Image 1 (cartoon, rainbow, N blue to C red):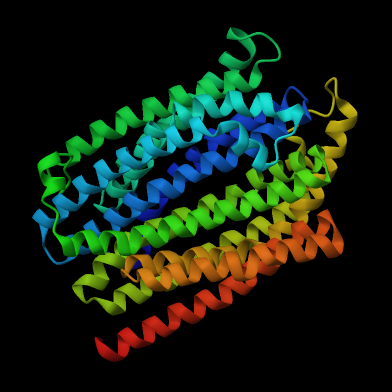
Image 2 (image 1 turned 30 degrees about the horizontal axis):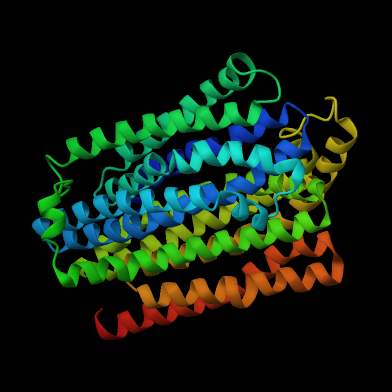
Length: 452
């Protein structure tokens, strides 16, 4: 089918699943904000970093095996694709259990390191016990299964699985927070709702994966996982490791943001936490576009259809830039109302809540400018992953976060305070995007010269 229609058929379900997946954390923050308690909001901000680390673990085996499955399907190697999918499935289970145990053992010092104060530690521990220690397995496995299903051409099944969990979370949050549990236990209620939603999504995706395996090269048999060849295992990790590192470095950057913000005050931290949730809405659209394009790029790259591959790359980039431009316009105009959605300024702690919302509105107007260059970073990274260029992906990830963004964060905060901390995102992402485009264009020119 024409590239725009093919991209839409893959990207729209992926965007929907990204948006609904976003609900897991945004809904928690929204209902916690109804309490007007800035310290609960600050605790939710701290634990969001640990939740986002689940994405890095799922990318290791989910993106790594999913990208390779698409490329193997492009060259008609169904049996090898089946073994790769099984290896990705069991690898996701193993790394999820390891992460849950690690966080459970070192929870308190880890939360202190992330910036938890005496006022926020208790709330952060409640959320971490349920969502991370008890919930890492269903959360990581769900995301990994969705990646593999999407790359095998089953984007709708992946979308339904992740979306069903998010919708359930919206229904369970107010029930647990304001009906079943007493006042003061809202964070615990949000965590319980999220855990149950993750379990429900995981059960559906396991069923969908099993059903898809009847017509697609997908498997969850231990024998298939054990039979994966050395070359395919190397190819899986050559994409999965850079993808995990990319997300892990993004998490590291968020850790640095939280630590610097908490050094100013819990209210600055809470305000930054609100912004980091609001700005994920356009990011969800852009990630959905990039992830939807990934299997099309991978399939056409492996089958030698380079003209169609490049048209897909151009189309995805233009769509993402349009989303970014629109998001800047909306956030510059409605930054205040967007921030107030996440914190009730008329509750008991109204003075602190009003200060927190003021910080959030200011930070949002500054950070939203980064949306177009963030899109260029996502786009180039997913294109390189689709083509199996693991080294270039890893180089981009390291330079983007460790050379540009994180140093900008500390430098601009030292010079301009919390305003500089917010401004570090557009500055660092712009530098990272320039480097990403250089890598991608050099790669495409090389491929055109040697293969087209």
